Length: 302
Image (cartoon, rainbow, N blue to C red; front, side, top):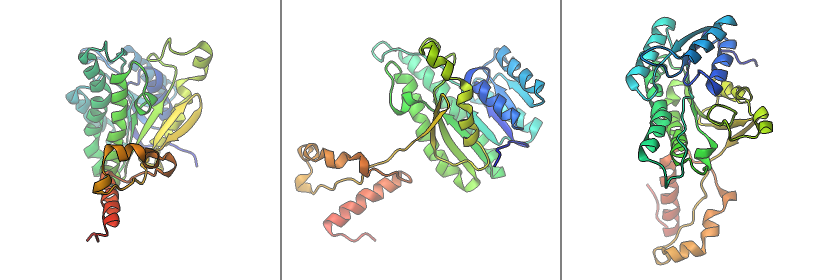
C-alpha cells in the first residue's frame, strides 16, 4: 500500500538542511503541508528554511517557514498555534533539530553539556508538549524523536550528545503509553548520515553512501497512518534495523545468598542475553521481580 500524507499537517524541526530538509521535502512530496522549522534570528526565518519552503512550493507543495528556537517553549507554542490557525491541525511532529558540542567529559564545560541537552531533549519535549493536546483532541498523532547510536551504544567524546539521545528513548516509552488511547504513535529514529554535524568524520567513499535521503524512507514509515509505536529504527546508507531493549528473567537469591559475591559467581546466569525479553512498562519489571521472589518463598500473591 502506498504511503501518502494528503490532508496531513507536519512540523519538522531543524529542517533547513541535512536530515530535516530531506524529511520535509519527502513529506511535502507525498502530500503533507509542512512547517519548515529552522532557528532564525529576531523572529525572522533563516535563509535555509526559506530555501526549503521555496523548493517545496516549486514542486507544487504547501509549506511555511518558522524560526522558533526549539529550546524556547513560548516560541514553539507560537509555531504550533500558527500552524493550527492556518491549516487547522497538526498531525505529525518530526523532532529533528540538534547541535554538537563534542569534547571528552574531562574537558567538557557543563554549560556545553546542558546546552546540548536543552536543544535535543528539552527541545523535543517542548515541541511535543506544544502539539500534544491537539493530537489528543483529534485522536490522531504521529511523533518521531531523533536518537542516535551515540545514545544507544555510546561514542567517545559525546557524553552530552549521548545522554540527550538516550533520553529520547525514555521519552518515547512514556509517551507511547500515555498516547495510545488517543491513537498517538511515538517512535524513535536513530539515523546516521552525511550532514553538517558529521562533516569531516566520514571518508569520501562513506560520505557518498551516507546521504540524508537514504534515511528519510524510515522516517516516513514511522509517521505514517499505519505506523507502529515504540520502535527504535536505525537507518543509514539505505540500511534499516530495529534496536530491541530486553531484560533477562532474573535470578532470585535467598537472604542467605544475597551477597555481592554470589552475584559475581552467578553473573553469567543473571546476564545471559539469549534469555532477555522486552517489558511492557516499569511496573512490569516490579511485578516480575515480586512474582519470582514470591514463588521462591512459596508465597501466594493476592
